[in-house]
Length: 371
Image (cartoon, rainbow, N blue to C red):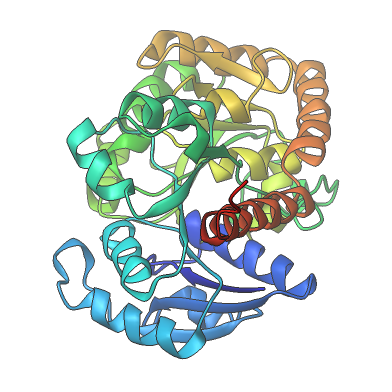
């Protein structure tokens, strides 16, 4: 089997990380993979187990992108084209597949409703659309995508890399020069509006007054960095909150957290939530979109209504005050991640999908036998 993958993301997190997991897993199962990604992207530099072709990609308005993709597909001659991202790729990827006569599938990662007229155009070239969560599946159905074309395959987490580690605590405290009694709350998310950093910062002064040992790490990068830095200073939290940026050693630090907080108001699923769970760290989050698939309220973490900052603060305070409950939720979160979000099952589900798409194509192409 030959699969061509199109991923327009430039950074190796979120969707691009999932593509790497999938490509590596498929290759291990004997699949021949072509990866089409932006020139100079982190995904290309990571050297996934595929033939990598770096293309010029300029986003939604790149009218020449379909021609570039068509040329790459014509050389590789794939059995299936798998489009993994937006930034225009969901439109020109499907168009390029249709022009080359290759069946295509699309992974939809975004928790956002779409008007039916747009969905009819965008999803028409795709034999199947992969939804990461129940929330996305519901949105696709509401936009008019036939239920038979929607397949739910959640994101995967590398449970061998993200795992509980008793030594991580000392490593984390040493890295940021914090005292041994610190209660560390982590946030792992792009620094963009919908991730809710502002809401979290707003509740911290009250939380810190109650528990002076609280410290917060904001992992991630994005356009809100200057604004968040100014807000931290204005709230008098510069000695409590660190903008930690992107850390290549995140997997080694994450198990040292006491709690992961996630105040996103929209979320397709939330890879950071899966990574925290796999590391044995309980999550406190808004019950937004696919977060409800990633976190089992009361069992692997605590969920509160979207936008209810008082409830979010109360949930954080509850866990920070109870070491036993944190340990219970963290252990359950690890088991849940291993059971439902492992890479092996993720790869198997995609292989099954590709086989189904090719089987349906063969059935349509078979001549009708007259009786």
